[in-house]
Image (tube, rainbow, N blue to C red; front, top):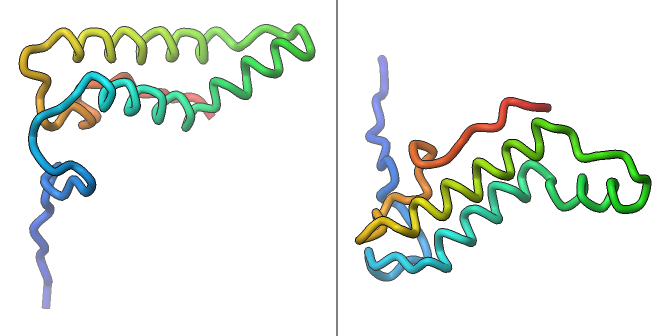
Amino acid sequence: MVRLAVIDGGQGRAGRASDHVRIEDVEAEAQRRLRICRVQEWRAREFITGIAVPADIKHFELQVNFAAQAICCLSPIPADFDDDLYWPTYWGE
């Protein structure tokens, strides 16, 4: 027998009391995405060793920052702003 489940795509957002989204929420999402890519570690490595941050990491960081700025300019900011639809994808390691 096949069991099917309903997926609450973006509706199970814990910690958000209302649909009012603040700029700080968007900035936090951008930082979360950069943390996953370990941008700070690459920056630290560059500072310590002098080896440049790989171009794909720099490019991804620019894309995330641009997406965050663009989302913050929307009025109102969509409640599903943290959906992958709005953000660049990193295809690296």
